Image (cartoon, rainbow, N blue to C red):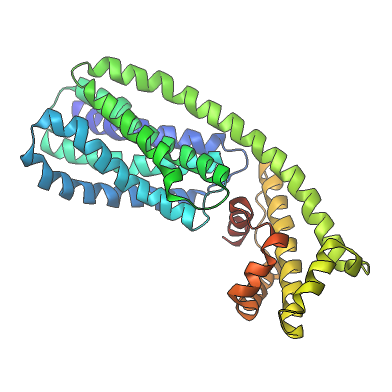
Amino acid sequence: MAEILRPALALAPVAAFLAVLLVLDSYKLVRLRAVVGVVIAGMLVAGIAYVVNGALLPQLKFATYTRYVAPPVEEALKALVIVALMRGHRIGFLVDAAICGFAVGTGFALVENLDYLAIEPGSPLGTWVVRGFGTALMHGGATASFAVLALAFLERAGRWRWRALLPGYALAVLLHSAFNHFLLWPLQATLGIVFVLPLVFWAVFSRSEAALGEWLGRGFDADAETLQLINAAGLPDSPIGRYLHELKARFHGPVVADMLCYLRLHTELALRAKGVLLARENGFDVPLDEVTREKFAELGYLEKSVGRTGLLALHPMLRRSRRDLWQLYLLGK
């Protein structure tokens, strides 16, 4: 029985917690396939951390290393996965930041606990309660904290700034180091994680879903108005029309025509993405139809035709914030 309980205690708690987060995500912002990919990335990062820790640990005392060196090294490696997702516009709201962050920590914890299980296969069951409910959840919670704070500060900055990542990274390192300081009191540290972490995620989910609902309402109105102006005969009298007229002095006529087509397609797809989110909230999974796929292909062609300079000129009308780019990714995947 103990041979079955040890791996179950080592692996099940963090995997079950991640599954609960996915169920609580009413908008289904992160699909299961994407979560699996992020977990695998966390496992790969754990392999890199194993090599780095193996090289650095002999240089210091074990307690010193686990408290002051391992936390910044491991949290930096896990954070790289989140940064890559953010740079690729795969994360738009606090909910998906929290899920992706916890998924990275889950992959990391699974490899770490499997390695420990191979080294100490006969260790007491109490050890695996601590490692499964304490250490593993700590890894997920620390990386989720980094992801949530990083996204919040990037949204406040309005554009990509590396220093916006520092508060989240500092918090993740602090949480990791604080947990390792309590290794002499493992039960207390584990109980702290088990009771505090669900409350933190509940607060994040509540705030994020409220913000998402508000953004959907405002976004629908703005996109619908933009699309109506583009399709209406009165476009030249609108701010968009006047702006496009000004661009004629800087771009050739065919390029301006492509800009208008690009703006129309971008707005149509943005509206479609918001509709998909609302459908998911109500329990419907809307597949990507062939017409929408063709629009994405045409959008890619127009993007090349307009060029980087043209896209920069369209920036004021596209409202290409992190969330706008994220919603197009959401629909495209």
